[in-house]
Image 1: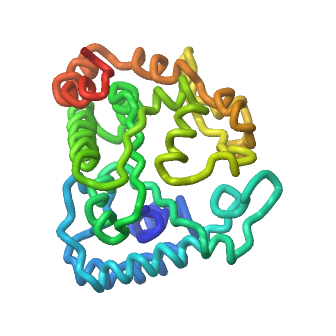
Image 2: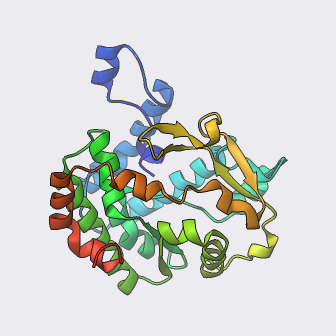
Length: 278
């Protein structure tokens, strides 16, 4: 979601110093940020800042209209092979089909605090919260030096608290665990489709991407050594072949005792709430 409104690219300062742009073309990023500027000015808050782990103020009516328009426009533009291109294997969507389709958005990190406002904007929206073992999540952030053990543990706890609150107070809100998706992929996907009022019988193939995973020896390789983010199509009863059952275990065992202790101290309540620790 942040990429939709602010673009994918490093700040201008990094671009000038490093003489490179890591993300979308500079013109695209500039265009998105100029389009986002009226929302920033009107709301006096960076609504789509992933690093803001707090509820936003209620949106103004004009902001809701602008957000809705941007989301619709971006849905039509997202025609990449990993976006709204394929309806099923080798069968592309038509533009009219995309225009008529329900909008799907992914809110990660601090953007999960937007659910309340989106529920107000779209009363018939369906919310699916995906939870994963916080010890594995924290290990990834620590390994990439994105945060200290305490920082990421506090964020994990705050995010889980908000998800549990939203599940109790928002309509059409369902929590699923990553671990259940891995161990019971077909059953879990069927539950998600049913909850979203979609007919899974119309699904001919499932499209997944080849992403990087941590192996038992600590190496970080792309799934089955395929090109990164290559599209892979599966029959519904074969999607379990895509998942690595010991991914959590491989990451958690890489945590040093001090970091693990810190995570359990600051995020223990969330880990216990979702059955990851007793």
